[in-house]
Image (cartoon, rainbow, N blue to C red; front, side, top):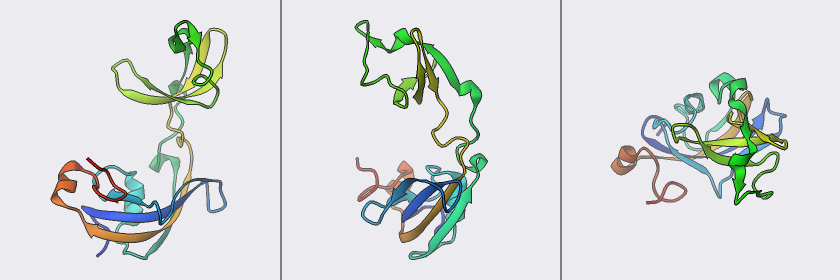
Length: 168
């Protein structure tokens, strides 16, 4: 069996920034593998295309440019917000509002998005709403652990059910 549409893929990986010698920023091991429904649109398209036709026990190594991953850094996604929108009962919560913290927020239409606190001044907070991996080159290495046919329910729901997948 090879990786193709509607196969459930279980794999290990190590994600490094820039190249094989880069900083490790994410990983999944055999105890907690990444399990996903191939072709369901849940993964980066170029990540999936680099895995196409691989089999269980195959190793992989590839690099995605920022354009093929999370895109470039968009300067307009770094904005100053009034500090009062972060106040609860007239006070700032120091456990929530600190540089580097990722805060779940909503845009004007109510869509959820995460923002990273860049800086804090007396009256405003600079937030970065770019994906944390925007502008970064991603280098993946890993191994395909196992493959199986997706169930009809997994295909209709668009994700994996059961161990290491989504549970209802």
